[in-house]
Amino acid sequence: MTAPCHHKITIYQIYPRSFYDSNNDGIGDLKGILQKLDYLHELGFETLWISPFFSSPQADFGYDISNYTDIAPEYGKMEDALQLIEEIHKRGMKIVFDMVMNHTSDQHAWFKESRSSRDNPKADWYLWRDPLPSLLRRGAGGEVPNNWKSMTGGSGWHYAEERDQYYWSSFLPMKPDLNYRNPEVKKAMLNIVRFWLGKGVDGFRLDIFNVIYKDAEFRDNPFAFQLAPTETNPSGFFQEAKYTLNQSESFTFAKELRAVCDEFGEKMLLGEISGDRETTRKFLGEETNDGLTHAFDFDMLTFKFTAEYFGDLIKKIEANYPDPFMPIYVFGNHDRRRSINRIGEDQQKAKLIHTLQMTVRGVPCIYYGEEIGMTNLKQSFAAALDPIPHKFKFIPPIFFDMIGLTINRDEVRTPMQWDGTRNAGFSFAEKTWLPVHENYREINVAAESEDENSLLNTICALAKIRQTEKSLQEGTLEILEGLPSGVLGYARKLGNEKIVILLNFEEKEKQFEFENAECILKLSPKDQTKNKAIYLGGFGGMILK
Ligand code: BGC
Image (cartoon, rainbow, N blue to C red; front, top):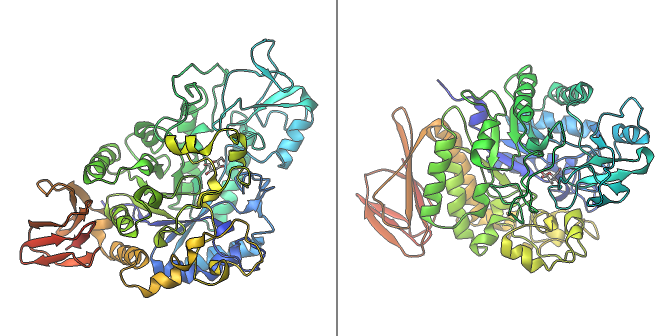
């Protein structure tokens, strides 16, 4: 059986505000993406996931949508979105929109109406509850309905005077959660999905998909001895998210959504799901892949740079995502710290993790700028545009660094570094929406294109190899035993085709005997094959065929 097309993809995430500014207002836009399509095409990633660019007050930079079928003016017009779909398809590429289904902006017409009274036609479109007569849970307008905490800390209940009631919000107060137990809400949202599929979109990345349903009875969450949420355990703030996450109806909804997409052909549904691997997998289906097509594996964002760590990681992922399931390997996104900062901003080490990402059995997803090794830009909480740090500005940032949480997401959203000219070639504006990282003179697309050993050229070469080698797209994976310590090796096989990947996670050079094969990519100039001997430079690696 051949693998479905969507399992062979490579994904590039564009954060539109920071990608390329075509009209010099300091903010990236859709025409900017259009102008850079040839770059992306040459880079060799064929599926572009674009973070939200729909109408929005931008209180959470587009993840607060006020109209799902219209474009925010700073990003362009509907005709630009349609042209983008067309131009991407012309190049044989695919486009994935970001679908924020769990909540709308509080400025969405649905919420404004819902909030206006207890008996309007949309009164039940969001999660409204009466204040509770308890002395303990005092909120702004009385007593909050239960003990639920939001994903960003503190009660997620917010008072609205108009109704003398609280509404629930999983993330931030200006993003009220929709009530999916109301069939009209589900119908309206699925119609939006159909609207964009009808315009030719190839699928959706699904924002916080596993919070979509909450407990029907609004039962209190139990106590848990856990301060902050982690990649594998989304509970936190001393509470187990038992009634606010992963409700059985959310798994069923994944299948319903898939069925709607199937009406339009083979489409992708990429789930942002927090939690342990088994739960994440359940969103894809039990026996067959009839739920979401993919889910991101976020556990690897906290990797240790060792052969053992990655060997174990691959084994765990393989066990959890056997065929026909396929994980997404991801090292960064608009919410998490860029991974290169975990490895001392070392581009040679970055070549290793991306070689792994592009050659294991899984879909690779890279975040804009990762291909050139863009780094995080430390910025103060007080000056942050991101709303989250303002919730935590009384806690010293060093505390979050110690527990590995990214609070100020501005740090990972700085403008793309295209070249060494002003504003890194991102914009001619006086001021860009976020500052450009000062390292742009060295770390930029133009400079790295010239250097054949650059991270950029390595990633480009990897993408080309993945495009031509079927065994990398759909072959099996077998970890190789008996290699020197510090070296991770695995084979990808499909019929008679075989590709071997060897990665040296240590600074020390390695030499060992290995079967005769042609080397099709070297990560370090010191890497060599001679007869049956393999030499790997420090943090070197190779792909053999
Ligand atoms: C998005 C964030 C967003 C949040 C809530 C996350 O998945 O990636 O940027 O703020 O969901 O919508």
